Length: 328
View (cartoon, rainbow, N blue to C red):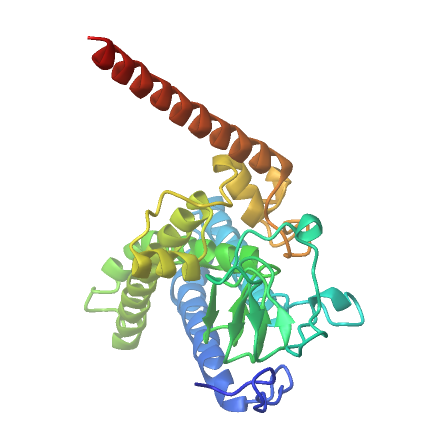
């Protein structure tokens, strides 16, 4: 059993945000891929097509669209790295989250106020032994970041950060723009790749175009699969961790206590303003502490009411059958 502050052990010390330079290597690798594809597409495709003058405004429009998509991709990537995913409030902000495992000194949190949906099997509130705090719904402790993350989806080494409540939208858009950018490169650069097979063209031009096209196809397929998976998670109102937990426990993937309908589920990830859904701004409102809205409570109460009425109807029907058999 691992030791923690509530079991008499010592919690791992918290490090500065970028206190482990070795973990920046994946970030540097991703930045290198972005630079290589941008350089190849601009140097060996966009600029030559524009300078040739044979394609007119189309070449300029193609270059403009490519730079806009790439700019949005880079912005989302930076936000994924720099924006903290969110953690449990400190005792200075909200002391009710502090957990003290000592008789007579345990912090009590009123369920009527926070309305938690997730409890331990023992019926107690979920708490983190490392952070010595109660856990809000959908909160999990990340041993890499060494803190609890609000609405934790997963830890991503490629962004040197966790994907949580405050940066989930930017990660989702990062996958979207990566897949879109790779698709744009593959489709628009293909004519230049075929033209480079001309024996009169330099070998280096053919190599760079072919390498860029192959790399874009590979990254496009991978990012498209990941993006499709996260679209599925968004529409089902579950995170990657919750998906894995349902898979392990063999629960149905179609049930989530946080389901708000397809529109509400999209707003929970991309924000309440549809005009900003595809832009790295206007994230979902809230603190990432509670995810049950009034309409969800009403729907759950109605479902419980229907279940109670169904059981009462079945019981009365069974009693009627028993009475008729006894009278016969």
